[in-house]
Image (cartoon, rainbow, N blue to C red; front, top):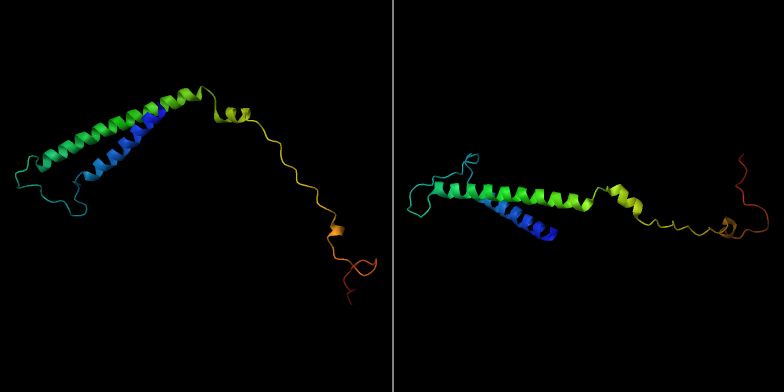
Length: 123
């Protein structure tokens, strides 16, 4: 059920974006608004704008309805528990201990004799 509503929600979102982009800008901010006059088409410029406006409202209402529906479904699935409560129920893995490092004496190069390697005395 959740997946069906999510798919419908996504389709509504894409449709709403498309319808909004199809509408003509009435502000004329870019100076591109042309007159819709002339011609004898079945739909005049104003009738097409009214149809797109109504379609935008319908898609927006449906989009909000699916948003609220998904919120209600998610709240029912939460069943009063928080994310932190669910983290406490998860099995805790024991930390992996690092192997003990070998003694550093084994890593040093062999020296001539048993005398320790020291820097030369300062004058």
